[in-house]
Image 1 (spheres, protein in one colour):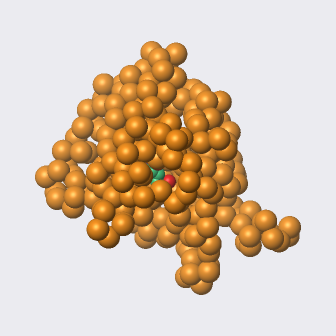
Image 2: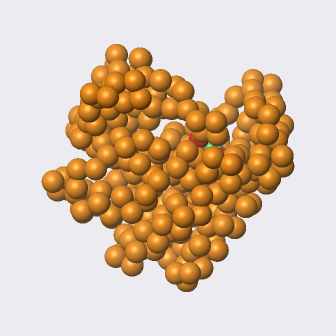
Length: 265
Ligand code: GLU
């Protein structure tokens, strides 16, 4: 039993493209509806939940018919612009069932780099939470991918969610992906690989050897999860990596059950 997790009040939930988007590149509505149900219930329990959701680029490229990978930078940005609209619209429709309003925040690195804009960003989230609104955050991919360097400002939304968790002094950061958690070895190749329940530190060798491979629409792979967990541990932030295909897993996590992998000192 993980005791102190139950006390978490400010919770950042990050859902990755691999969990939210179906193989055909459209929203997996059963995952989204379950996630929305969980968040609405947590809000009823007076928890403050901030959602960081990926999926925009995947949805947008499907909508625009950009089937061929890899996309050009311009195609990625156009996909993000279109996909973000569809993503937030779908969330609002799902939250309508619970009488909840969503508020969208799109983040760029420079917003965090300057203390004034960083504070403004934080204040907006605080006001949304105080007003009973669900803040939904994504990187502002439509403007943040650099045409010249072909690079994003954030490596991925794991990094975005980590930064949001630290800025908002979250008690808990729940990262929902398409894996059960961190394994002792790659479970695809080694059937004896065990799910690790609790890590107090991230081994540097494990980090260096971890795979950056991810699904057709997602980014970062397990390497990104470990890098983020390492940063969370250094900052004293508790993080749980769990499978987001069944978002009700959040209830189990908050009961202190040993699901997924807990990263905590
Ligand atoms: N911001 C991207 C999107 O919404 C996802 C980045 C990531 O997968 O981490 O499509």
